[in-house]
Length: 187
Image (cartoon, rainbow, N blue to C red; front, side, top):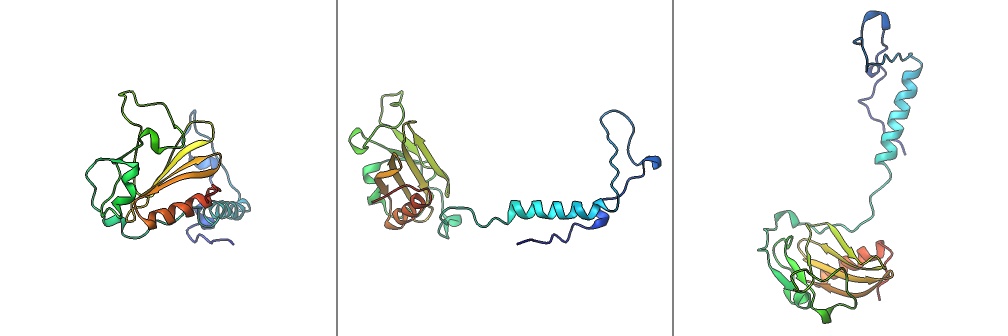
């Protein structure tokens, strides 16, 4: 499929007359002379390039449910991951809130222990952002802020979701859809 960009016209590429002084003289400037037979080819190339860059279909991903634009910001807090499901739909944007992971809540450790000796934590990203923290050995935590439904986190080990937490059933469903797009196996 090709799109026609009506703003590109043959006269958009003027033919320069080197003798008319159309270009300033001196270093760093190169005179470009384009014949009338090259202009239509340039239009086809420019239009095809635009189409190849913008006509490849929709990007892979799951749509964020409507209403996230109207969410107020939640107060920044620390939420133990084991309490995330009790939160439900938060009614505000959780960006900036930290999810904490006690030692017994993760199937594996991701990243070094905190310098302050506290429990590991992940900060919830902005709505629609997918954040992943891994250990370089195929194990990672994938967190998505879904907006109105809240947030979901998946622990992934070698391409398989081994644990999942979500603030609501809707956030969990969206997370499962995202995992499927990323070819992560979930049971």
